[in-house]
Length: 131
Image (cartoon, rainbow, N blue to C red; front, side, top):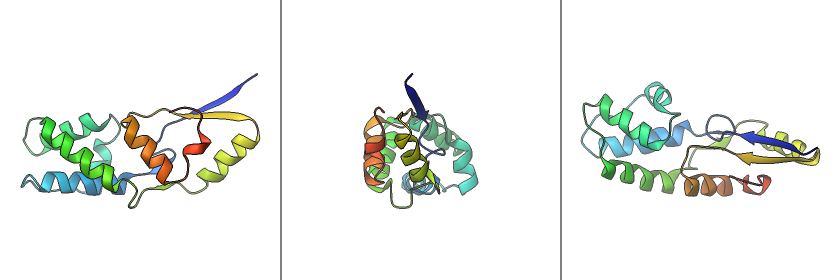
């Protein structure tokens, strides 16, 4: 029997809130709007980047804007691993699962290129058979 484990990325394998928060604040303050607290950003994360930008703009009384989404993605792409790290023990758990014959994959609503880049920069990409 094949043993397969599928993991979420943000908030499960990696603690990425700090970088998402920083990029969101740079994006929003670049529009002349006030930034957010960490708690506010954490509450907005989880439904994908389009939803994040929609929620952030709505919280500042603004409609969704594709250019703002693009601005966030450019900023986040350049800074996605400034503070993001695997949660404590995750690399060891992944190694143990691989040694026990598990094939692993990541299922995320993060855009594929951003997710691949993040996994590569954190040295986790080679542990997963699929993204």
